[in-house]
Image 1 (cartoon, rainbow, N blue to C red):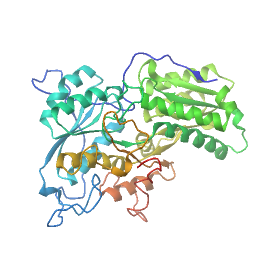
Image 2: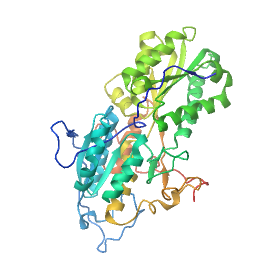
Image 3: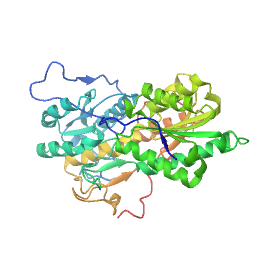
Length: 428
């Protein structure tokens, strides 16, 4: 039987990240642009292209042969409703890089510190001040986002959460989405962690392990990961799913590292007979808190924490720290952000609309109440301490960036990994 640790409070937060910005008469306590260090891209901001300036690549993806400088220099901004993680800063740097090589004026990241009222009061002015908007808003508020930006006529793209209308049972899309099927992510982690347990401790039966998912049940996209994980675990090991499966729900407060440590510590304390743990952390902050809880209880060597994310993990490894957070399923930020900012550019430049971009990625099962929008899926890859520098350096080579200047480049080409996945048969 599923054991849910924490009670859900009435807290509307983004799936993994959130957004905001200002307008008319800016109040004294309005949020200001976060300081985002330069990515020092190696490519020119206005690459030379063909004389007729006809795109040669896929609309919505960066085209190195296209002369972006022949078009207007569009002004864009990245809105985050609550910058709680280094992942937001890493994302802003990736957006800044792509903006530089696509001749856009990137105005930085604007953080609203969780103040949803301030975000929506200032969003209309932000829309008037910019040609396009990238955002991580509260995942349950994209219906309001779409209404405001639709009235303003300002193109936009959400980033880490799908822009869905959660007021309707079918949760239809409100715009193009680039990202992941959250239920499938959770299902993948169930199988992945059981495989890690067998490979790492071959003489230990799975009956000695407990399984924890660190959840934030108030954010539908995150909670879908937990549901997918539990459903798959029931298929793979029903004994574990029924008797040693726990949900550590950070919705008692927020999905930060401190709250995650508290709820995971409570599970560990309430089940002292279990000394080996497999933990699926839905985002990086949750993984950091989980690893801290295991360390304090003396379970570090007998446990495996993995997260869907990984930016904080490779920063931790770069700093020389290893703990129970041993892996992540990861996509480098430059690879993740390319089709997001690429779609926004296409909207601003009149090359496509939210209804026509990425036509092969229209899911035939999607409710089209608000329009027929693409859901472009992305790959993700395992990173371990032994191989993470190879993956990250490939992202530099692929995107012509220099975020990881000290990582070795030997043997890495733009095709060392794929930035795309096959289109499922259910898409048309």
